[in-house]
Image (cartoon, rainbow, N blue to C red; front, top):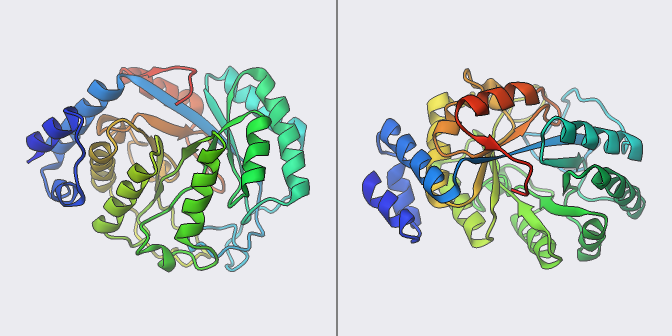
Length: 320
C-alpha cells in the first residue's frame, strides 16, 4: 500500500481521501521512510526556517477554544497594544542576522483597524530594509488591506484553516470556515502567497485532518504549518491530552503524501515533543517556525540550526 502510494505521488498524480486514510493505518516506520524519501526527491534538502513575533497581544474578540488571547476565557496572558516600528524592525534585523529567511508579525484580533494597518505598513517598510522576507498574520482583512501589505513589502500572508470544515464549529463560532477561505483567496488575488495549516490534537479525527489537507491542496497552499495543541490552562481545551511523538510523526508523513511539494512546517507545540521535532524532520517535514511562539516558549534558532545541520538539511535564505 505504501509503495503504491509512493509511486503514484512520485509520478505526479494525487492521492484521494480514501487512499490517504489507508495510510493512517500502515506501519509507521515504513510510512515515515517513504514520506522522507518523497520529500528528498520532490523538494531536495533545502529547509525553510521562519520566526514570528507577537505584535499585539490579548483582548481578542474571537472565541477560538485553543487560544489564551481570547477575552472569552480566563487564561493568563500578557496584554499589550501594537509594537512600535522600531521594535518590529529591530526584531526582523536580529532574525536575519541569525540566519532566518522569513519573519512574521502576528496580531491578536479578528482584523486590524485602519490606524493599525497604517502603522504596521510603516513598520514593514522599515523591517524589509534588512533583506528578510516578510509574512503577516492579521486576521480576516479586506482586499484593500491585503494590497497595502503587499505594497509595504509583505510577500506572504498567514491564515490557518485550523481544522476541517466539519469540525471547525467545535473550535470557533465567532467567524466561519468560509470567512477564512475568502480571506485566503483575497490575499492570493493581490499576489501574496499564503501560509495555512492547522492545529492537531483538539479532538479532531483522522478524517478531519485529511479533509483539511485536501482543502489546502485545493487552495494551492505551499507553506503548511502543523501545530500541536499545547493545552493552556483557562482555555476550553486545557484538558486535552498531548499528542504522542508517534502520532505527530504519522501526521507529518501523511501530509507529505497529501501535499508532496509543499513546505510542511512544524510549528507551535513542538517543545512538547521529547525530541523537539527531530523525528518529524525525518518523516517528511522540511520547514519549521523557530524561536518563541505567540504565548508559549519555543526552541532557539541556534539549537534548531544545529539539529538541522546534523540531519543534512541546508537552511538557505530564500522564499519558501
